[in-house]
Length: 472
Image (cartoon, rainbow, N blue to C red; front, side):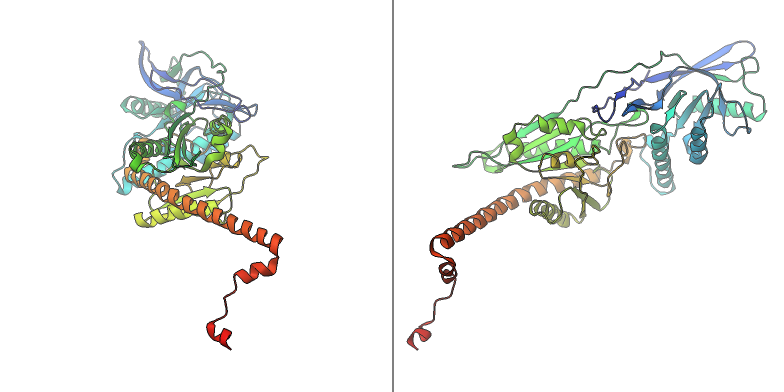
């Protein structure tokens, strides 16, 4: 038995329940006249969950049917057949039509190519892997948004399963269906039917680096760096989320390590507190982030100048995006963007800005920074994605493996954020001084007008007459 079930930090209004999904062992039984030969391969069950009371995913787990392979004759009875479908040969249009028509089926077994688990060498192979990942992404979105009344499993191609598929195809080519007497293969998964799992516990992890407190300073402002670590995919045991959002987690941990060394000495400690947060429940409207923010003391929440949320920063080339809820003209958003742009120019990359206004009445949360905006904290999300993903999209699917992550992109993301934080800390100090200066000027003007009149205020700023004018 291989693999692990990765539970998400689901919210009540988002995901009502998630059923336990484990990697199981598929027994391939070859039915021959003199006896049975069996072999075992690891398979991974399609997720089963409820969303707002509606069931999605595969509702059955047990399997005990003969194997078949496409194509089939029109009108063929597949109610007791497990169809083996290699992803590299998959016709998504045909599969979607078959699922939509709700025809009876004994089960589905998708064969995942080994290519997606290994780093491509470039050229045609790289393009083929890119195409496979695109197909996997579409397949995953199809399967997790429908209710399938039969077992669905995934397995990786290997010599054993490929030999079985070749034998099944030879048998199907004769036009004689596989049975216990005619031969063929039976696919067996012996497991009890799934039961509803208890609500997963949301676990948020945070770290704190206190800034240098100066004379007369009672409370320092805070900058937060946040990333969500949960994943959601068609097969939970295969949902590792290396880019979304493992890349954000790696970047956050390295940034925390760098600043912890700087903050270890008063001589290099900044005048800002740094708050680091790893949050749960990212695929489910960032429910963990919401609960994390609500757990804050009000003074801490009000001390946060801004937060940088990291999302999918491990496979970009030359452009990243800052996603914001406040207009880009907002003075604080503008300063954050300028600090990132300044560092990006030095690194030879581009940082764009995308404004997406949030609707407080809509429970859908597309970006993590939106949870900060809902509690009136300035925040941005840094991502290689130019548009907001749909619900349960880009949350760590079958295609999101370690080998799609570019280490150079991770290093540049870390450098961009770390140096931007250093620039922003100085910029916000100047911004605070400017705001304080503007306030004092307005207060002085108001007092002069109310006590001495507007004319006296204007006379204060008039140029005195020259000596020649006085002599004349």
